[in-house]
Image 1 (tube, rainbow, N blue to C red):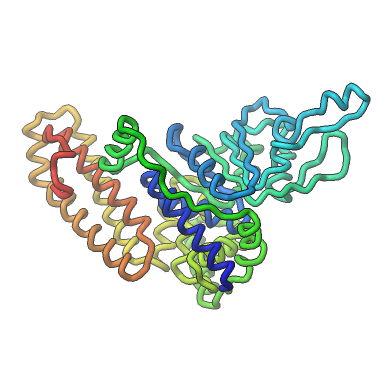
Image 2 (image 1 turned 90 degrees about the vertical axis):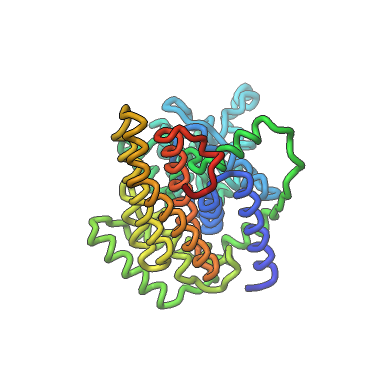
Length: 399
């Protein structure tokens, strides 16, 4: 990889690190958004309100010097002109029908579209054209306008519920789920940040827009895809088909660009097996399908993370048991903790620690392990608080 490309990748990795420090439990989200932009694709961040979706999009775009950023909150009544350019009233008074494009989607390099599936019927076709071909057809019927859009980051609190919104959903290659903070220590840090004195300004790495554009158009497409990776993708497709999860040929083809972008971000000139993990955000339609996709991907690339998912099942079962015991006496809850929850949660926590050490030592991704560890700590905190009446923050990491 040439020196300029290495510098671009290094800067983007630094941006990922800085944003991960600021946004708790969002390491994988941040990296995936950057990889998606490098691939020139669009992403959907799916999650409840108050999970920093828009703030993260703004902060990421703010690191690209010279990039025009545009954002909008859609509703069923949003007119196309509000998105792509209002009518020039002064020109209209002179008998000319023109639109003002500055500051609208038509001039943006990166767009953030909140509540994407509430796109109005009137704006649907133009939105699809904008996402697909990066073009906008003016209201006066003039020649299509080419838009400089690199990628759109979209967000929603819910999945699409109609054919119109489903057409948009299909154009969003990457789908990322986010939720509220799970690790009690991260939640405590969030609370402290709200009541404490402002901290010193954090490091803020930036990247020139031209460097990002060169990476998208030249650097990422130049990354090689070895035959072994092609074989792994074919194997993954067959495994998912056996689970009745079928993605379109177009989606698989576009996914190759994500693999190249992941390798580019890591400073490599060819795709490796570890890059396949990004496909966990591509090959599902509903959140219920995501665990199946994740397991099949991790079967190929990350045995540590696959074991972590097995431990996640143990943790989820314990939480379900705790829910089922609601209303029982403190004595009954304490007995359940001693005979059941204590050992299983402690064992899961210790094993997750070892898995993370092994994965980090081998240079493999720890994102899945970290996510499961957050769930283990969250359930542990519930057990301590609800079953034993103990303040979880006053107890060491393991029970």
